[in-house]
Structures are given as C-alpha cells and as structure tokens.
Amino acid sequence: MNLSLFGQSVYVQTDVITAWIFTIVLSVLLIFFILKKRKLPVIWDYMRTTNHRKIGTIYLLFGFIFFLRAGVDALFIRTQLAVPNNEFWVFQFEKYNQAFSTHGTIMIFFAATPMLLGLMNLAVPLQIGARDLAFPFLNAVGVWLFIAGAVVFNIAFFLDSAPAIGWTGYAPLSTALFTPGVNTDFYVFGVQITGLGTILTAINIIVTIIRHRAPGMTFFRMPLFAWSAFVTSFLMIIAFAVLTIGLYLLMFDRLFGTQFFQGPDGDPVLWQHLFWIFGHPEVYILAIPAFGIFSDIISTFAKKRIFGYPMMVFSIILIGFLSFTVWAHHMLTVGLGPLLNTFFAVSTMAIAVPTGIKIFNWLFTIKGGSLRFPTPMLFSLGFIPSFVMGGVTGVMLSVSAANFQFHDSHFVVAHFHYVIVASTILGIFAGIYYYYPKMTGLMLDDKLGKWHFWLFLIGYHLTFLPMHITGLNGMQRRVFSYDVGEGLEVTNMLSTIGAFIMGISTLFLFYNIFKTHRKNEKVGPDPWDGRTLEWTVASPSPEVTFKPMPLVEEMDPLWYAKIRGEKIKTIKDQRASPISKDSILPLLIGVTLGVLGICLIYQLYLIAFIPGTMVFVLMIIRALTDEKSNYYGKKEVSE
Ligand code: HEM
Ligand SMILES: [Cu+2]
Image (cartoon, rainbow, N blue to C red):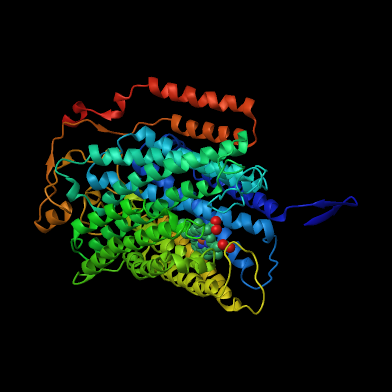
C-alpha cells in the first residue's frame, strides 16, 4: 500500500505490519496472563524439563501453534482463489507463492511431524512400560531444535522475506541464480535445524523400544502405536538423512557457489531425486503413526483385541519398506523413460496392498465389537472412508500415462490433502482427545469434541472433494488466479467455504480446552476403560512411572487383568532405567543453533563464530556432566 507522508509517497507492507501488530498484541496479552496467573515457575520448569510427558506437551503445543499459522495461510490461499480474477488484499503474484510455500512447509515440518512426535513422546514409553525415553537429555535437545528451526523459518515472514519456492524447494528455482535474496535461505536453514532434531528423536525412540521394554513386553505384545513409532523412526532416520544431504548441497550452491543443482555440471533433477527419496517416506512418516493411534483407539472402543495383529505389524513394516521404492512417482513427467516410469508405477500400486489389509483389519475389529463412540473413536471412524478415497486417487495418479494429465493440477492437491488430512490430522486430533487425560489429568468435553469432529469432517470433504473436479477442469496448482467461464468458479467457491468451516471447527477445540481447564475436574488413571499399560499409571503421568515394574504376560495386559479381576503383575526390576533430570542446556543448544542459522542466512560469517563456538562449548559441558546420575539405579528401585 502507498501512503503519503509529508508529501512523499512511502510503500508500506500492510500484511507484514498487520502481522507485527497482531503478534505484539498477542505477546503482551500472553505475558500479562502469565504474570497474573503466576505461571512463570511452570514455564521455567518446562524450559528445563527432560521428562517425556512434558516434552510431548511442548511438541504438541508448539506444533499446534504452527498448525494455526499454516492454517491461516491456507485460508488466505482459499480466499484468494474464491472467485476468478480476485485481487484479495496483497495475496497475488509473489505473495501467493509465499503463502503456499510457507503453508506447505510449515504443515509438514513444523506442525504435523512434531505433533506426532509429541504423541509418541507422551504415549510410547508408557505403552511399553519404560520410565522415560532412553536418552532424556537428547529428547529435550530434539524438541528445542524443532522449535529453533521453526522459529527461524517463521521469522522470514516478519522480515518480508518468506520463501516462495514451494515446500519442495525445486532447483534450479531454489538456487541463487533464480532466488538470490535471503528468502530461500530461511527455508534451507529452518528445515535443516528442525530435521536434525527429528533425527535425534527418532534414534531415541528406536533405542527406547529396543532397550527399555518392561519385563515380558515382547515385540509381539507391543501396542500398535508403539510398533508404528518404531517403524516410523527408522523411516525418519533414513529419510531425514537424505534431506539433510540435499539441503547441505543446496546450501553450498547458494552460499559458496558450488554447482550441484545448476550450471554446466549441475543437475536440477538430482535435487528432485534427493528431495523425494526423503519426501515420499515423509508421507508415511506422517501416516504410519496415525495408523497406530487409530488401531489402539478402535480396539479400545470396540472392546476387542485388534483383528489380525500380526498382519497389522507386518503391513506397517512392509509399507515402511516399500515407501523407499516409490519416490519417482512424483517425477513421472521429468523424462525418466518408460522403463523407470513403469517400475515406479507398479511399486506405487503395490503399497495399496498392505494398506488395504490394514483397512480390512480395522473393519473386522469394529465388526461384532461392543462399540462406544466418544470423540477419539469418531475421529478414527471418520478416517477410514476418507483415507480410502485418498488412496483411490493415489492409485489413479500412479498410472504414469495418466499422470501427464493430472500432474501439477489441483487434482494432485486434492489427492494429497485427502491422504494427509485423513490420516495425520484426524489421527492427531484423535490422539489429542484420547491422551489429554494422560497429559493433563483432565478430560476434554465430549459434546464440544463432537462439534469439532463433525464440522471438521464436513469442511474437509467440502474443501477437497470439489477440488478434484477443479483440477480435472484444468486448474493449475501454485497459480494465484483463473479466468471466468472455464468451469472453475463453482468448485473453487465450495472449496473456500469448506476451508472456513474447518477453520471454525478448530475454534471448538480451543473453547473445549479453555472450558476443560476452567472446570478442572481430575480423572483417574483409566478414564477410557483401556487395555494397555499407559492406563495403569496416574493421570497426568508422574515423573517416575512404573515403580515397581509391570510384568507383562500377554497382549493388552491391563484388559485381561481387568477381566480376571486382578491387578497387573509386577516385578522388582533390577535394571537401571533412564529418568529425567532438569537441564537448561538443551534449550541453550536450540537457541545458539537458531542464532547460528540466522547469521549464516545473512552471511555474517565472522559473527557466526560466536554461536558456532557456543554450541561446541555447550556440548563439551554436557559431555563433562555425569551421565550415570541421569539413571534410576538399582538402589532406588529396591527401596
Ligand atoms: C486445513 C485446511 C487446509 C486447506 C484449506 C489447504 C489448502 C491448500 C491449497 C488450496 C493448496 C494449493 C495451493 C496451490 O497450489 O495453489 C495447498 C497446498 C499444500 N498443502 Fe494444504 N491445506 C490444508 C491443510 C494442509 C495440511 C494439514 C497439510 C499437511 C500436513 C497441507 C500440506 C500442503 C502442502 C505440502 C501443499 C503444497 C504446497 C506447495 O505446492 O508447495 N495442507 N493447501
Ligand atoms: Cu509419494
């Protein structure tokens, strides 16, 4: 907007200024609230915590904040696309590119993935009878790296430098030749820092599950969410390692003039390979944990053991494995040739088989069960048909000849939102309602939960079902405008209305949380009549759980103990197990790495030495502190 000041015309970024004002007002209100309610000690406690429940809570809280930001991006996108030739506020041209880039990147890296990591943190140790994750300190480093990366990425908008290269960062657009400013660097460093945290947490979860299961908790007695966390963590390590390499090469291209993805010796398609070798497994990193959550919830509320448990485990592993063999189905149009296109088409279709097996196992678990329908169960039931619809268009897209028609159209956008929102987002909501008692000791209101569910489900289908037709009628993705009379008006308008219904549904969750905390009615350890170990410990879960250790002799141990009218068997465990010990170092490591990232983005190499050295100093301090004291030793257990 051009303002006239003292006779001079000054250009003002209205959206950026609005965001500044909004954020400042919100922060002041927040600080006021914190001081008034005397919450400072709680915050200080969370800043130093290494306890899995608290870290899970931090993941969920921050993941949700970024989910809201990306959701607002989506509403801006949909408002701009509501009518043809729209000139809504500033959201045309480059701003539109920024909006969908930040929307996609934030949703994937800073909202969906961390919220799932939060649920894993919260539930997995309790499900397998571990007192905490294997490396509590590392766990805290993981969460603060996620936040550091996310903050670096989000700062960009406030400096009017948001990245505009899509969530995929395709070269050569992402090289310095075509996007010379700092915008793309915010993407490179923000994602890199967060990705590092994700790798650390994945290692942590794998070690925890291998080393710290309770006595008798064999692999094939583990609940399916623990299984899915296990498989997902392997995918994370491999996929994020590849992304890390890709981002390093891109960073070298951008900052130091190497030519991996550009120039006579570089190859932009190399970036696409690296990105999708990460990117496709990432889709399953988002989906598999949700499968696990749905499995446990459906089994609980059908009062039945999950149908075909060994097949469920086997298909998770198979899906995880196959997810590394399909990456080029995102590249069917780059000219790999018929042989490779056929290979990737067939391997993609093959994934439908284990996925189909899971769908039938869920249906058979429901069949003949004595069903209850509280909010978490509704989200799980809503997932099944919605996800199948996304699966069907997935198989359509994998047909390589047809893909030339679908590629880069809103049909693709409709497809992947069907899959991701049905699995990940419904899964996260289901998980939040299900585990809220374990996280806070409070039960969310069921009636408000049902409002949230129905509005969200209706809004979701209203947004993305018509979008298939928009795409088939020729609407390009990543384009900010369309013309009158091309058959795009009606379906686009429906999508926009649907998006706002989804937005409104989220308000019900807010109100629910507010109301629940105001009422403050504590619940017991087992509010859902559960089946697995997490429902044997108090709500919220205490700092030291499982004292003494449970002795597991079958699957769903709590359920069968309840049927027999017994208590869970326990055993005096003599193994040392990890417990959390407060430390401010993880937060400091996050902050220094974030500052280092910003120095590198602005190419302040000399200044970068300060945070760079500090990271090393912090790591040395950590190395010199006594690791053993973080363990719950033999002495305490036998007391
Ligand atoms: C909540 C409602 C949502 C709405 C209304 C929405 C809407 C949209 C629209 C319209 C686009 C296409 C923009 C374009 O190509 O011109 C888009 C892109 C995208 N969305 Fe969403 N979305 C939503 C939720 C999500 C969620 C939950 C995720 C992932 C967890 C997600 C991930 C993405 C990604 C990765 C892109 C691609 C960005 C790119 O082209 O680089 N979205 N979204
Ligand atoms: Cu894929």
